[in-house]
Image 1: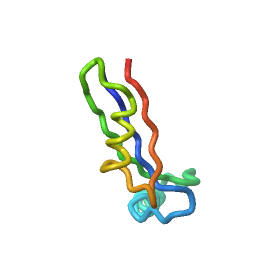
Image 2: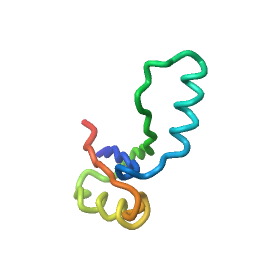
Image 3: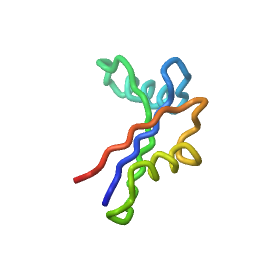
Image 4: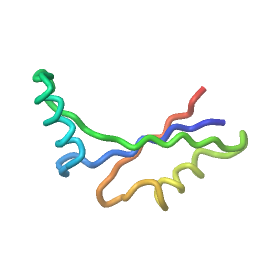
Length: 77
């Protein structure tokens, strides 16, 4: 079974990496950009019988910083 976990900053927090990329794209002529945000994507392959709660625990304990980040878990078909 394959899960995709997306980790991203909470709304209102500065995303310096996204700011640099957004500025660079605008300098290259991509003026239509209104906002750019970064995310981390983890693809986690587990045994079939692994419950999604185990993926939740991975997120809470290591993959996401609960103070600054949110996450979404999607089962990949």
